[in-house]
Image (cartoon, rainbow, N blue to C red; front, side, top):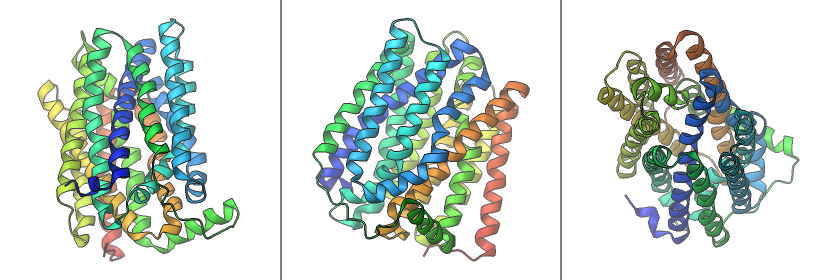
Length: 402
């Protein structure tokens, strides 16, 4: 389970990234809670999510070229500084009593730009942390475990912090949490191979597109991630509405519990994958089954009112969500050559981030005009349609992951 921890750089990166992700989740929870408190608008709640993701639509693919042709450690480090300063700006605005939704939207845009460049570099850098590349599947699974462990710890800490001391401390902790990772990045050994191509930006991008178009398995996996991002992930943005409905008198603590439930499921899913990864020929069926489970559980939330049952369903959503994403990521990582790694993985992160803002916007519009239940039901139904489409395409084209 901990094979990748034998690598010193990976172990150091894992630990400091864990601290940073805890801070990021604390800010995510506090930000959603704060926006809904300031506006009482499901649409603006979705719009803030839209603002944080929309830069990816324009910058994520160029970010993949940057990841292939510049030092990935420096790219990620620069992104951490931008996100830290953005969090500090919001913390000061809250402390001085001059916070408004426009400032949150502006900060979300800055963070979105930073992530557009760091996400492809981060994905591609995992292999650069390893002297023994046979440990890559375990490293990807352990990355997922770390992210989802922070998804449990961060929201729970945010719920307690919001109830006891307010949002300022969530934003301040996030600003500080980037510093250990910046330190660790500066101490890592450079293993990244020098680029072989000297072509211009658009030529490099076109080369990446041609590779993906020729590999139908990678193309299908990217399409699955796009569909799950559009229909599945926006439910996280809607959690402040669920918390308000279920925990009217303590919605901050309730939001932490709901997000902690999602994180607990995601943690269980990633822990299972770190100990056992399906054989290659069974990965595609496992991906499709996880999407079906995700869609059924998410749709069921629309019909349930009991607190414990909703949390249990969110645990299932979290587990299915991470199993789908991690299996797609691992399959793509194992298929692509190093020369294409940054560009193809930028398409992976683009498939996620570029469709997420529109999913957030759609979920916000449905919730604004028809209510939370129909929004959740529509997202769950969309996932089931996506699973059926993936099954039909994989069978029609006889795609296998060997």
